[in-house]
Amino acid sequence: MKRVLFVDDEAQILEGFRDLLRRHRNKWDLVFALGAAAGLAEVEKGSRFDVVVSDMRMPGMDGAALLARVRERDPTTVRVILSGFTDEEGMLRTIGVAHRVLAKPCDSATLVAVIEGVEEATVDDRVRRMVLGLEVPPSPPRAWARLGELMANPECTARQIVAELESDPGISLKVLQLVNSAFFGLPQPVTSLARAVTFLGNRTLLATVLAVEAFQVGPGVSPRLVNEVQRHGIWAGRIARQLDPPSRDEAYVASLLQDVGRLVLAASTGKTYDRVVHRAGSGSLAAAEFEEYGMTHAEVGGYLLRTWGLPGPLCDAVAASHTPRPEAAWDLASATCAAGALAAWAAHKTESPPIGARVLGIPERFPTWREIAASVTTS
Picture 1 (cartoon, rainbow, N blue to C red):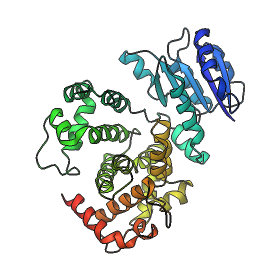
Picture 2 (picture 1 turned 90 degrees about the horizontal axis):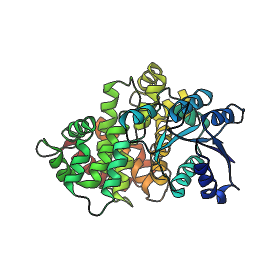
Picture 3 (picture 1 turned 180 degrees about the vertical axis):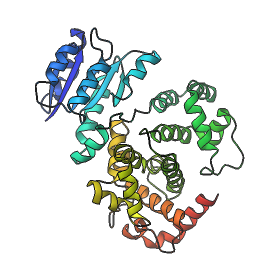
């Protein structure tokens, strides 16, 4: 049974949570603490919590300080800030301590989705510790979340999208850098956000913003590795869209992000990961990772995305992106696996079909797939 702790300095808010989640008490152990001091006392009693949801603004110790103490005691606890703050300083204080930041007031469906996301992530405890135990955990993609909320409005205009992007100069610069890289192969330079929106379209732009934020995971990761992960992801994403997947957009995003777990491993283990990559050489990186850590970067990436609240099927596809299943149905995970294998093949230009194509049991598709990969990676 999952244990979840809610902390707020207003009794009425806690009672609201109790009522909203009453029907889930048969499968979750829900604990409610009035104020940060009471919340910390619950944490220090001994029994660990799977999730801690804390208000940000509380007298004495605020939510960020409380979650920092929670992290010290058990870094594998998923830490969530629930707040109505809009100031930049308050948001910056959550970086490094919170895996998710939810707007206040928060509806029951959102809370349930967060808790169930943790519950459904049946991962090895080593993966959980690798992702949640980073001293500075990867921050949730806030610009992507804001942009997605804006695009969900049917009356959203391109001008509003550009204005939202321009409100974050760092993200704007990185989006333009990425769009103008050789990986996208656009016919002419894109010098403005307005043109980027026109060239890419809303869905691809949204995925690009998500990738920009995801690729920033882990301080101290070498620019060379970040560039390699970006190149592979963009190639794999563009290939995935042409493999007739069940959902082109989901296949694009899953393929784009399938190697983000490499950045987590590099951030967490430093030079050890460099040695793992060197040892793998042109062979299986996933096999070398498993030999060293008992896990692969795909599993780590899938779990990271789940802690960020991305859809379960997409997270599962990323987690399975380097473990092709023989005779599997042609689903999102299979398309993601094939796209990644083809992108890797295109980078090394070997003659034989990539292992993803062979193990998936559909080698007859490889000539067509090879043409797709070649056209994407040389455009």
